[in-house]
Image 1 (spheres, rainbow, N blue to C red):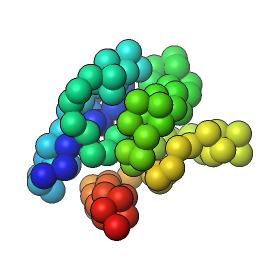
Image 2 (image 1 turned 90 degrees about the vertical axis):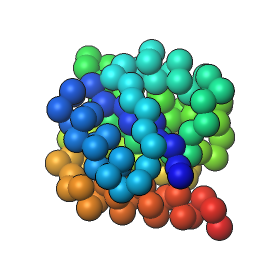
Image 3 (image 1 turned 135 degrees about the vertical axis):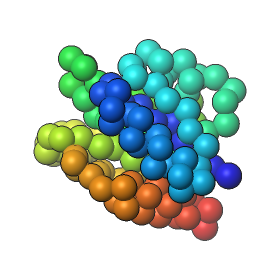
Length: 124
């Protein structure tokens, strides 16, 4: 069973994403801030995928920074980036691979599809 770190600053969205992923059979860990996510990423906790909002509170590109931490600490771990804002070309160029972008608002089906496709691609 895959373990997913869900990083989201909006409590309702965090709970919904966590619930959708758990219902689909994934184990989840959660973080609401960049610092919380960084602590988990720098731990020995096994993680198979990161699902992160790009903007966390006033930190407009926190999710981009989380991706860079993933690249340093857990290179090759897939990242699903989510945001209610359009990505600029500059932001797009900073997304780590393998990754995908999920615009908000997203559906439960889009979350599960994005996660399962990235996890499947990583196993090939």
